[in-house]
Length: 424
Image: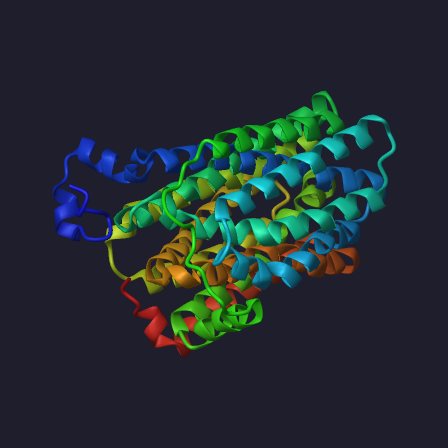
């Protein structure tokens, strides 16, 4: 029945479900047509993003041979994302979210096509890459809040937790497939054709999203100014401990923990000596682990102790990151990358579900936009780790990130017992 959901089923009732009932319950959001179209479109869109990340990193490294330039290119993307995210979230709470999402995807597709042409014609220069990274950051500042805020318009409230979990599998499936495909394509046909495949994937997402049909107004009309709306979102986060603490944990994970992803080309080429193919498989190992992490989070979604789950996942992530940093053996690095993906995604999915379920819909774009902004700050960590790697080496830079993430989780556990004891 529609009133029965992962949100309301007790742990004892969940254990009594048959195997087929558990399968149906785990994918209940996909029974809604609009969400199916969104999910498959998102799958294609995120595939393009993952492939583009590999292509850009390898291209910058080939042009500059500098870890610092990797970080600076990421920072060029991050600056407009940081500057415009609050505005993007406020607009998502008052404009047509589907239309914003479509125009943003069209902009990304055009950028991929232009980059493909520049690389194939051998006209590409670092300033081209950085300029397009800046424009992409502007687009993403409006795109991400709208995608997150669109969720309640596609599924009923009882299916939102399931939609969050299923949505998480999109990123993990693409982390598993996208980087490996990109690495192999770069090796076989070059970076230019790889960008063209990104363009095709973005086009597929646009076609699917055009078929979404939403009923009723997308947002409530308001006469308040955008500045008032932005301040209201910040005030809501500041006054609710659960939101600012978990957004802060996401910030530490993104800035200090995930910087290892930006340093991955350096590890593949200079530490492990496995080339672009090995780089892609390292990324995919992380994707496989992250997929396992989101499935574990889904399995434990009916269990209490969510605060402890998040803190434990952060600690495991930090310790494993230090192990990865000092590994000189490719097989061990693959295993560590898998464990990093699993631990990181487990506690990030737990945090995301807690935030989504407790948010008032009229604030969803702003608050989730700020939460998403924490993820977009990863290139800032790339700049920090790139600077450290330039002078002390990539292993030291990545180990520093592990210490920061683990330390943050330890502080939350000790200083904020309410968060540690959070049940749901």
